[in-house]
Image (cartoon, rainbow, N blue to C red; front, side, top):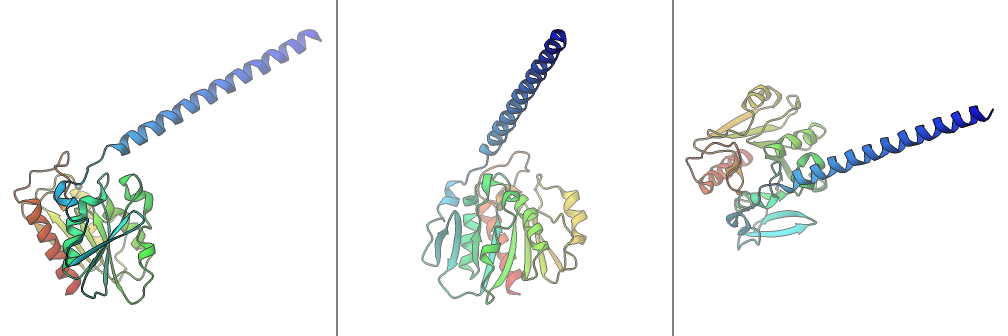
Length: 252
C-alpha cells in the first residue's frame, strides 16, 4: 500500500513538473512573440519635413483632429469625402501633402490613423465617417492601405468610387456599381505586379493611370523605401500627378 501511494505521489509530482515546464515554455514563447511583434511594428517609415509642413493647414485648407485621425477640409463648400488608408508601416502624416492638395481641389479628405501603422488592425476605420447621406463617399489607400480598404468596401453599398495607389484588391468587387481608379508608378519595385494584374478583373469600371518615373514610396512623403526603384521625378511632381488623377476621377 505504501509503495502504491509513493508511486502515485511520484507520478503526480512528475506531472506537475511537466505542466510547470510547459507553462514556462509557453509563457516564454508568448513573451518572445509579443516582443518581436512590437519590435517589428516599432520600425516604420516616418513622415519627412515636407509632409509635416501640411499638418497645420493653410488659408484654403482647414486641418482638424478626430482622435488620431486628420481631416483636411476645403474652406469652400464640398459634398465629397475621400477616406484614405495609409500604407503599411508608414506614419500616417506622410500622406498629409496628398490629403491637403486634394482638399485644395475641393475634396474633403480624411486621413485615418491605424494601430501599429498597419491598416489590417482597423479595416472599418472609414465607418464612422460615412453616416451623412448628403455626402458622396470615395475610399482608398496606398499599398497595404488599399488592400485593407477593399475588405471594408466589400460589405458596403454607399461607396461611389475606390482609389488605389500602388495597390490592388484581394477580394472580388466586380459586382459593385462604383467606379475604380488604380494609380501605378513605372519605377515601383515594391508593389506585387502579378497580384495587381490578376486583380484588375476584380474591380468594376476600372480606370488605370500610370505615373511615368514615379515609384512606390513617393505616393507618400517618407523617404526611400527598401527595395523600391529609383524615381526619375520628384515626390512633389508625383504628388501633383496623383492629385490630378484623383480629382479628375471624382469630378468627371
